[in-house]
Image (cartoon, rainbow, N blue to C red; front, side, top):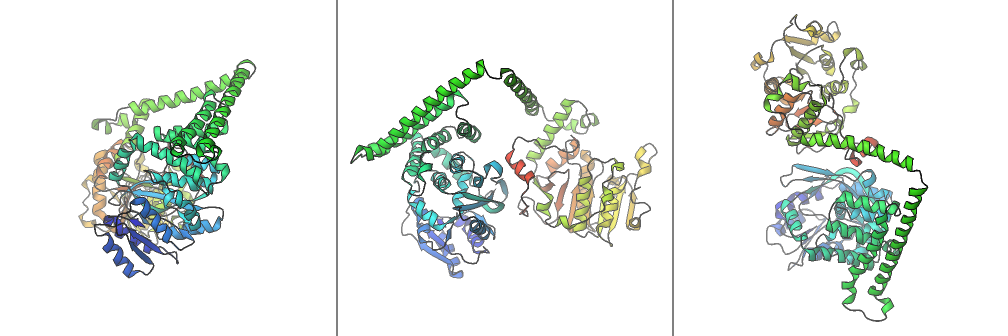
Length: 638
């Protein structure tokens, strides 16, 4: 851990490092002449833990020298850098060391990262699944991936083989953003493993980001980064020679990164060029330009002092490579001209025309939908409770509902997690298959099963339900345990309502009926005082208008006992009033949303924004969601 004036977050970082469950670690701290309480905090921890070695620099050596100092002091087989404002789960080291032990060819291993704000609340998650997983790429593709704005620079905090790092350390670029260039060196040298588990929490510092962006605006700074990349690849003793031959392409990739910083465009252009450089007339010219970039990058480096034979100088070597790159590019341009001539005169023009038309049709549909999403105005407050708006059948209203829901979810303080991330033992719960009954006419049976499974997992003894209807959920809630008592509330029977005669039919005449108390009353007139704080599970699934949900939610909290759970159903585009209420309500009291359902969840005593999700097993579905950002989630009852 290299540190300078890091007292603000240092305590948290050191506590998490000392809590690692890996048995044999040493913690080396290099205090770069701090002027705050940093040294006192480090000295106290060193006095409490013999594994800590504290080095105090007599003067500020600068961040890069301090970064190198801790590495040179390390004695273990494996090595990692630790930032003083981050923290790690206890299994970080052991999990990543095990990954390296299982893959002897790998030079480093990194996990998924959760970025948190300075107050510790979650900001976002960074994963490298599917096509973004460096372990699935060859050396050149790894290099190109690292040179996109994707957060591969986080691999600087991976667990490395110590010998691997020491060999590459002399070539650490002493420039702004040198961490990404340094990671590139390792990406070109050996495979980098990735573990899709959140074991590392990185603190997002807006002030640091603003400082970086301000410095990055300088053309001199960007040229220094470009020059450092070329110099590192050329000089590194660990990068294989065949990987160094890719320097022109990598130089072009980094130049585009520095100029545009648009990950999707850069990555698409370069990978397309690698897979079929003859496909478009400009790609050959791009290779030629890459050669010129490589030559230009070394002019400043070699012109400063060329000595000895000319053929041994970097200027000569990279000028030759630049010329060869230009020749290859021109040849590819010529080949592409022949290819286009063939297609224009001999190829399957009709087939290609059909393909183009099909692609255009798909794009046109997507463009129209995207335009609707962008232009459709959110409904006014008066619209929210209009039945005609909520159940409109035309496409415009459908899109408006989706837009309003998406915008509301975006500004609501609702944390979306999979059920297993919240309740890791949920799969051990069993419920009767009778719940999945087409005769019931209910479109979303998974939601009901989830609600009842959670109640059973928690062993709920007293349950209150707003909204009985057929009583199917009531029946399954009563199965939470043999001691469970369910109180369910619905409006009094009314001959004008066709559903009245079916109210509670699902549990009537069954063994659980004796444990069900049915109340017929408008929830707005319900007096909760005799029942206050006496229910450990409350389910709200009644009228979804704004005022009704507000009333039922207030009374649900009055009924809930300490440590209990409240769940709400139909958080979906169709329930505009409900969505509007929770957009306001969650600003003060954040909630969970179970991914893939219409369920919201409150667990008494648990803050959704700081809750640490339980890990899930990897799956094709999770990988697909992570690698296809344009996939629009299909939400129940569009």
